[in-house]
Length: 204
Image (cartoon, rainbow, N blue to C red):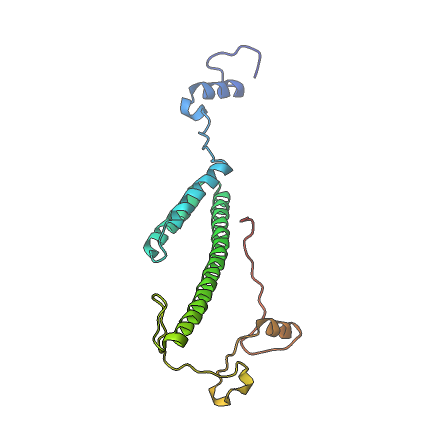
């Protein structure tokens, strides 16, 4: 700015700029409002809340699941940092998936353990009923336990090579690893090829 006084009607560039600033509407001189960006912790907390709601959806409630899916997507798209929001949702769901996978394995072990107990009790009960029948004859009971006749069951060798050929079922499964290796080595098969795909990373 010039340090020399200027007349009000002065047409110099400096005075023109000063008059423009003086006469400019106040709202033009204010800074644009700063949009508060949620912290990573807030994103994780919100994602966890939505994921918890997802866990409450019954397995057969497809409509409820879809509503929560849409809510998750809309929330992610509304965030300032969409990438971090999407990653937060992904991390929360991955953690839940891991938890339920471990729970499923743990419960499967419990199922096997309880089934083994049932098998042992059945074997013990069978031996006691047979012992009672040896004394009191067929139909003897040990408390609520008694023998019953079952439909005939097939008995034969476990070795399939000893089974009649006409009663063997053959199952074919694709050897993807072998076919991939063959194509890599230069072999060609109509309809088959090796294709590279690009995927997004950074979710975890």
